[in-house]
Length: 411
Image: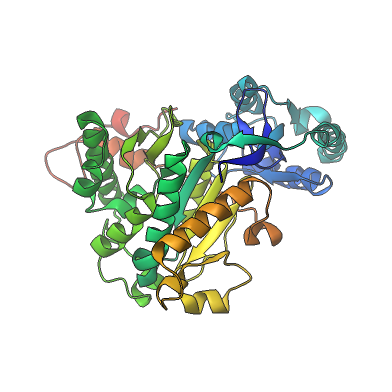
């Protein structure tokens, strides 16, 4: 396979889906937005749950989601009294060249008028989108995000390594891949740094993981934490889990670290393999990588995760044959075939690569068939960030004093 069928956008990017996005700056206007989206085929509504104040990290992710190539048009629905406004988000999305319109509930005269007007706007966008046809594009136009969740011992043994084979194949074709979950890179700094394309990138990898460990301590969370499902699934230490998790990144050189903060949400500047400084929680991790431009997601799960995503198709890969047998309605690929010897690591990896290309060309994933549209925006704790900036790596540590100015939330 040397290409896929996608939709060219005005900015030259290529989408693999044609979603109309109803985006709300905060959850106070999410119900009217959902009702608008429910009445127009191909529309999906998303919001965030961090309040109506301006948070740069939240704003970056919402703008990035609107700019994702899988989104053909955006309708922003605001309440009217929030600090993170629809117009701020609209200004960030408009450079993509796609249709962007805004509605303010308080200015429209309530939810009934807003919903009626929103449906009219979306139906007009839908009629324009319906005229778009898929065209052939090289795989160099494809950006893949890889994620793991609900991991067990089979994830690191077979599922993640098989995904790594597919990742290597896509990068060899000129494509782009990113993976995050910084928390689950604990203890692998030296392994990942050896794959960096430069000393500068190696230093950035080590600094990223070190900062995440200190951030978690500042929040009072053990950086060696594993979920009950991880332990029940046979994982014994965070190092074992981390070494298995990074296998889904294949063997290619790491081009750089993508910032994912209140300051910026970086997107890959060239093809190849990239790390995103992302959260360890599954759905927000996927959300942030999609906001950074990923059109397709491959998600490995040993225990059995069912999540999808609002604007990007999510392929589920399990290395556990029991999970595959029990959850066939949710799993797309059975990497457990490696364990019973019916397939090799390379053959399963090649199958995942083909599935990625077929998905990019329009084949639905199991999560899409079920209509799963998960979407969660993560925001780092401003208190933890200020503790780190003040040189106090964990609450109560000696040698630092926090002033009121230090702890005041920033914009």
